[in-house]
Length: 257
Image (cartoon, rainbow, N blue to C red; front, side, top):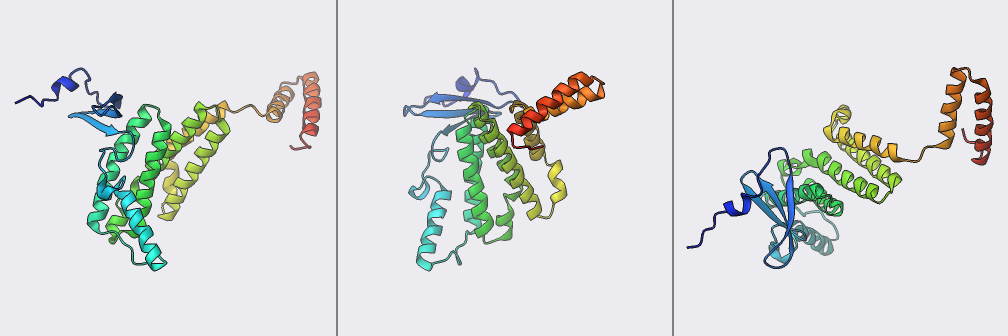
């Protein structure tokens, strides 16, 4: 009987606590797979569709299956009233979303930001579906505490992808939208005071600061600061020249201050 011991596979790829170790390999089916080293072995995931490669009810995922059920219900009844997800269905969807969590975490480590955006958005869709249609309150709320984290990961991936293309204003816009979404989450559940202390908000605000450092310097703001410095240091001749330059620049920009 041939050995099925995993040791030969993992002995040259040691697990290190606190580090996300991932790699891409080519499977026996000649398709690219993602592997993530975990403490007790290796997770292997498909890059497309459901990470375990299964097709429940011949759909890409349970999420797609239940979304199709929802659309069919709407066509038959003209409304979504009466559509619901049982506790077992919600549990199965939650279990499935964990697979996508592992994959987007691995993808982030590999800087494959498009895949991160795809899988985090997919899990946000899971939250929306369960929150709206779960039969029991416990199922509707089971994953809501994870929403700020998923929004944060989705936002970081969008922003870092834009930065990689040199699109710093786009990156900044992604971060601002992410912060608004997380603020809306805390407002919805009556915990607005928790916003500034949220670790997800702290991460996004740090990213916002880094993005702003890469933005082109506003010439008007720069001249105003130089003028203020010259006046404070009593370099009045420099101040006069800076004032003239500032007035000329303001005229070019329609007199904005």
